[in-house]
Length: 80
Image 1 (tube, rainbow, N blue to C red):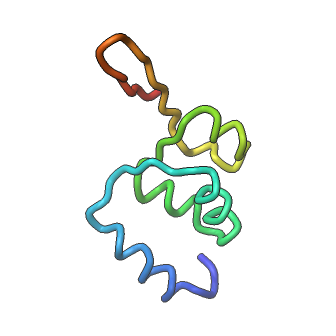
Image 2 (image 1 turned 90 degrees about the vertical axis):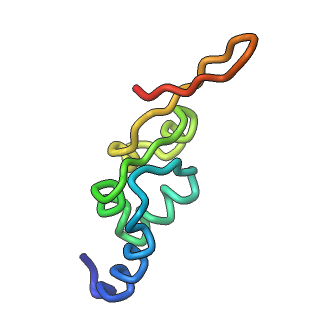
């Protein structure tokens, strides 16, 4: 962890009840630059769509792919 350990602990305490989340490209990029994407990945299960994971590249290796299948009556999300 970085020299900002108390600040990071405060941020992570806000996620105590969260066990999974969707994450967008900018959040992946900024949490990586702030040096806590890997910590976040180990704390909660992160999901994103293939297009975002392709855009963010190897920094998103710990994020699970969320795919959607469309049919006439609904959209079903699955992970792979």
